[in-house]
Amino acid sequence: QVDLVESGGGSVQAGGSLRLSCGASVGGSHVYMGWFRQAPGKEREGVASLYTFDGVTCYADYVKGRFTISRDATQNTVFLHMNNLKPEDAGRYYCARDAPRYSRLPCQNTLMPSFYDDWGQGTQVTVSS
Image 1 (spheres, helix red, strand yellow):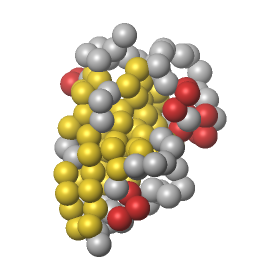
Image 2 (image 1 turned 135 degrees about the vertical axis):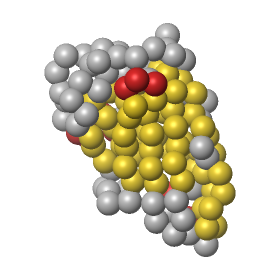
Image 3 (image 1 turned 30 degrees about the vertical axis):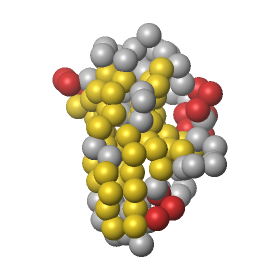
Image 4 (image 1 turned 120 degrees about the vertical axis):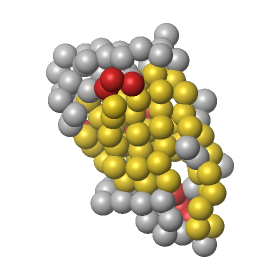
């Protein structure tokens, strides 16, 4: 069990930016880290993922060009930089971590909630129009 703690959520106007952080209790050189979001009454959906071995990233189509996932390996922290936020980006954002694996997987697999083992409690993002 790995503890994940998200922070950085808040309220912004459409077009604004936020940076979310996810601190992990342990590091990992061959794990996938993912960001997900869930709006009220909707399914949890994948936003972005990052493979810590080589830094390869994957993004859902609805955030490409606006969101960036990155990491600080020395701090066991993953970030989600969100720019040009839209009202439809609002929701609770969750960080997730997969168990170590030693091969890269197809992008879309890494955006599925079922792929991940450990989850944080989430941080709320509100975007007003």
